[in-house]
Image (cartoon, rainbow, N blue to C red; front, side, top):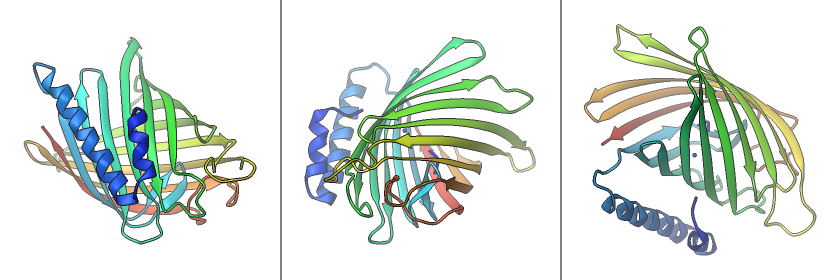
Length: 265
């Protein structure tokens, strides 16, 4: 899925046992969320997502095969924050935990900006050399043009010394007879990194590559607080070095499916 800032204390999670690090990260996040909710008069909306994915692809590079994915997101006005986990079914595939936050605002009627920060931890990275990443980004979404919504995003990863520029085009089509929507998104991007293995000894590994793809989702509301979502995804990359580029599988042109449930409160 394509595709959301912890403080210094949480870095200890990456130094402990793999499973205990994940558990501690989830536990501390939930404690912080509870403290925040206790300080405000009204609890912010909460969303919980659970899904199966036949593959996990990040910016054109497949990081894992069949996986279970889970996320919790808290929203308060223009601010959101959440935790996202990808747990592969196969041993040897990369496990990922992502803690993220974002703030959105509208400087003009036709433009919405969102600033984001995300800190990710990785286990079982092929070849090792990278345990975590820290990325900040700015995403601009323009007003729809003949039903299509264009977007442009820039991200900088401080640990990988990587810059990403991505352009996207989205459209939502009403499926009146089904009482649902078909949500389409097409994207292309370019990534340039100077240190794809920051935790490995020796010289830095630098590489640049491009990627593109598309996805289709059909969310269908089945209850007051529950939605079933089916998705089809395709992504590919070009120009990526297997040894010096970002970690991931070596295949190209990955087609995948997702099936999940969203719960909102």
